[in-house]
Image (tube, rainbow, N blue to C red; front, side, top):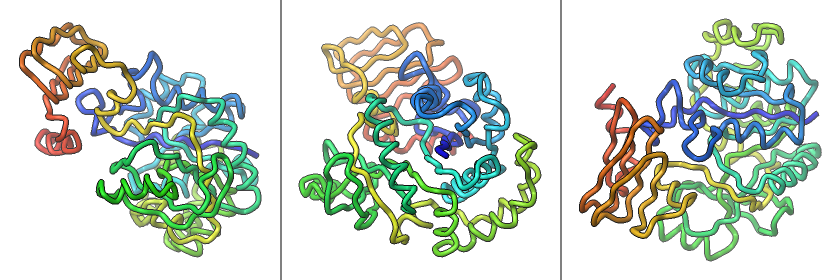
Length: 350
């Protein structure tokens, strides 16, 4: 039984002010005429009917989510009462799915990634399903196209596309010199953060490698049933807070011996920050990327200018290597090489 768990609880702080807590980047239409979560949802519909697609989010984002995905039944929205990182989210979300389907195969996806080749992506998912049914925890490794320092890596002995291979280890985000070595060796893949497993397999792994998550789930199970839908979050909150705050990589993927990786190439981009616009859209004659706003640019180059569509025009004079992001309420002007530090502004605002 193939099911999907789309993780959609992120706050998208790196795209502020376009992205907010109530409407983070996965709910914005700044990359196409559809939101990222709508694209993620539609991408998997050829594989399963909509009742087998679940979305994990937080309470504050539910109204915007329902507005964007009107066809989604309330029972398929899994509300996490608090952010306790991906190990808790995956354990909780897959347990909720198991209340509807007996030992389902669960595909965990991010809601805010772009994939240009949907057919190839779906082909890889079917390969991963077969591997998961053998008792493996499967992850998709993206074949690198350059030395990226913003992604984690997975080491493999065989990087042949679409051929499952054993994981030889997960690596943290490297410095450029190490990323260059990874890229040139052809033995390392980008860690996509996508996982495929049977429910019983992931629970066995948590029991062995992250007992806190297994025991917390066992305490949560009696507290909800499949008919409660979105009100479940209030019922499980006290127990949910007992989850250790750990990523699924740290809790399971770096420790388990049954991890299989599928080297993949389906046009993946995790849209991690504003510089993703440069990879996704054409530049003008001055190497500026402009989205959703009229722009006058004089002696200005290598800039990213983007709006949510609510602003009329931005004029630039003598500006280089900057990010200008505009909404009706806020304007961000940021040096490109500081785009990873946008959270510092949010700390000042909050």
